[in-house]
Image 1 (cartoon, one colour):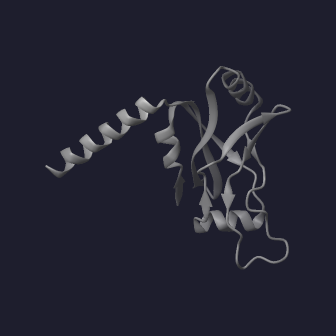
Image 2 (cartoon, helix red, strand yellow):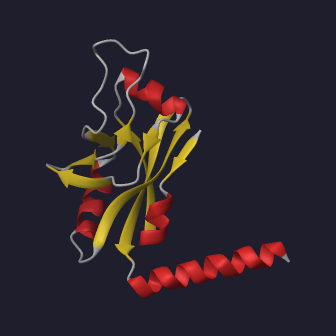
Length: 141
């Protein structure tokens, strides 16, 4: 089971990727295992030397009780202090953002792949579309 953020690869140029853990409550992990997750508009921020994931959608677990989770709550990311410090320095550069690229299970734990990204301009996006179309045509013939 793997949930990808396809929009991120189109809107951003990925400079570096970092794997980290994510803190989830019981009903959230069950929804993640079902694949009821959307990474589209989410991003990573750093506050008080801790990394947090904002705006990630995890659907409510239908079999959950009154202790079900909020869909778009802020979730803490598990990183080493050195990694957080390095990410904070890179984020302070102009035009750099931290975005989630992929959510997957590894040894029964939820892992998140974070991308250090720079936003693409409109002409870069057009170039990506052109390249994708050429690759698609080459596969057909």
